[in-house]
Image 1 (cartoon, one colour):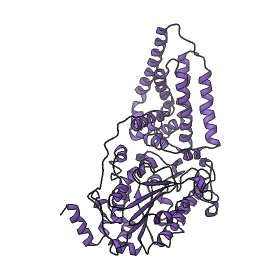
Image 2: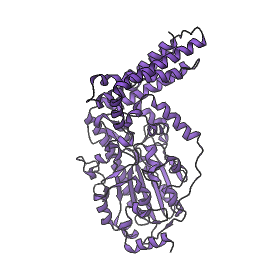
Image 3: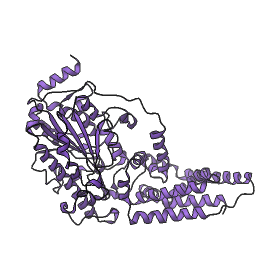
Image 4: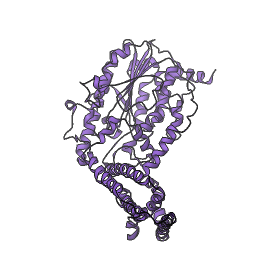
Amino acid sequence: MNMVTFIGILSVYYAFILNYPIVAKIYDLSADNSVIFHYISPVLLTFAFIIIFSVLALPYLFKTLFILLTLSSALAFYASVKYNVMFDYAMIENIFETNSAEAFTYFNFSSVLYFIVFGILPSLFIFNVKITPAKSLFQALLQRVLLVLFAVAGIALIALFFYKDYASVGRNNAYLNKMINPAHVFNSVKYINRTYFTKALQYKTLGEDAKLESAANGKPTLMLLVLGETARSQNIFYNGYHRNTNPYTQNMGVISFKNVSSCGTATAHSVPCMFSNMTHDNYNKARAYQQDDVLDVLAHAGVNLLWLENDGGDKGVAKNIQKIFIDPQENPDLCNGSSCYDAVLLKGLDQNIKAEKGNQLIALHLIGSHGPTYWQRYPASKAVFSPACNRSDIENCSDQEITNVYDNSQVYTDYVLAKAIEKLQTYSGEYNVALLYISDHGESLGENSLYLHGTPYAIAPKQQTTVPFFMWLPDAYAQAKGINKQCVINKAEEGTFSHDNLFHTLLGLYGVKTASKDNALDIVANCKSPSLQDGQMVAEAGI
């Protein structure tokens, strides 16, 4: 066939098949429009792809380019159809920063079948097709120009009759452009350029004036900061869930903040954001990576810090402190070869604590409820709810099976937290001990046909943006730090908070004074005794 026919066939395939999710979405959104408008969107996409592919069909390179494009688009198509995933910049960022073990959790019969049918088979067609060359360069250029003009005319004709319809649907649903396949290519290039070819900002230090207030009882502080993964507030017993997903900590005096929103819907965005002094509204990843975060400010105050990793990495927040990555090969009793149950983080905790003297903060990064392989997040002996969805193609499980397996992972997280609290209690004679737990983002479990996470924040459901936030605050700790515990409990019940509060609340709870801390974002600032508040205000004013 000639190049014009080849471009036409490829454009139809991308418009009618690989972009079925956006075609279906436009159909749903245009219920009040004319019948013809319901079905015209794939034709419009075909014309758009004709223009794009006419430019990309470069001599000698077009087969390689279109094969790579088709293979990656097949994977994007699978994620869009099965999980309603949109490949905006944030999702691409999350993909690039996902380790191989996490990536293989999406490997299943369904994903392989999609890849073969919609990726490999069309790629074989592209590889084997023989393009009939034009008689001359002029004829080749003329054919290409006429093809583009034909597509432009087609778009203009559709706009003539349906511009208002498309303008209305597009204006009210700006996320639609993120659904177009292969938009992931554009965002991938954008990510690579920003990450590897953009000059880094000058590093900025924060909180070098940080000082740690002495506790009233003279003891040093030992705090565990537990960073959860993919836990959503709606499935937390403390926050009104009908199931008891917190059976292990329910009698330990845990304070649960009922209304807490995340900075993002994916780990790669949320974690550096929540540890920075920036808010969701003004967060800039490039700046966050090139400045101190709350862990660095604690270090400036003389706190000994350690990061224990059992997830996909610290995302740059522990760049200046000691890190220990859990090796699945070294812990066969708690690991399956590629991932580990979170209890593994407690295995060497005594040794880590005793290795340091004075004030300490140890961060535990959980794998938590990371999907879609939820059943691999807890040992079978800890399963509470059944039947569970013990497979990665969760779209083939019932809603109840998905909820059961997810809730089992939440219960296991509660078990790990209870064990961590019990461990801290053994050190209460030597230290003022406390624990904080907060998740990076939530999860969709099939609501509105959405699964997993990573939906663009502007349209993400609350299941992905509302997260659990716990404090375990013994009376002795509150008294030593001059904190009115009942005040904190009242705030947890009635207040509205977010990841924006973590940087400042962690400093306030630990007892660190610095001009970098914003009392308005420190949850415990107004719950401290007046004398301590006045002293801090005087110190911050430089008087």
